[in-house]
Length: 400
Image (cartoon, rainbow, N blue to C red; front, side, top):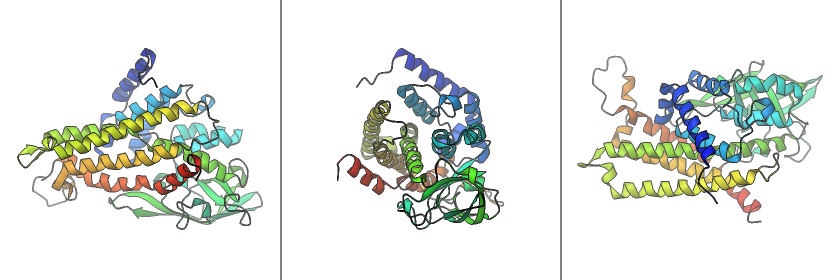
């Protein structure tokens, strides 16, 4: 495989680097680099800048704002976006519901939703997982009964990320309780302002409000909000999840965090020497670097093979990217936690409650190390747990 970029690809890469550095506000990129939670305004601001430049939805069809890029250009775009610490375009909009609507939605749905989805005029959240249907998603029980031109939806969704910000939710619902469980599921678009919807926060181990429970109590949904055909939602979900799992690898993000850990290790003293002088620490850095390079080559092979696959057929190799990518993301957060050391233990002193008149003990960058580490325990679970991905690999590649 030829791993060197052509002069044209290098020029393309340099243009992206310059744009990300000059156009995305430095304060937003610093939050991403430090692993801090972004506010809604940060995400909207960044995505609208990208969208104005035609860089928010390059994976979409050209007719709806996508780019006619080569597989290598798409790879470069994702890599540079992450390495520059630019907030990823909202996953639910750009890599999940947008491609599903573009591929399977009606023309009316495309006109109504796609431009607003690209510009984050509509913030989407994902209604897939339920208390009894996580990895075994096909066991979902949220039901939708068609009556008088509407679907009446009742049930509960769990782990709904950023649902507190959402304008709409795309849901898998059961429309045929008699069919085999994968065959009786449909894909619905639901306005979050609909009567009967309740959103309750779930505070995660890092102390943040990132996920929610969403309850549906006899919610009325217009029948025209059905995507594609009734009872075909499982096929659309598989298409969506393949897009999600490819993005979960986030090699550029791991590279950015690894580089930051190396820089901070050279500045952090422990036992009369810098942490970088510790041979065990450097060995762990080398192991992660080797793993990232191997994953990068694997992703480039997957990218190269995409041109030979049907657009509506997910590549099972995305499961490999999901597993190894999530493991390496977790490894980089562990490395940053080790660099922060005891400074990662206290709650952020830089919030300084009223009456506190002592200077902060820890360097400011260390405040985010523990919350980031705890938050990233999730990446081996969401998007289909790594155990489920191993089953997919066993069936698709090994024939087991």
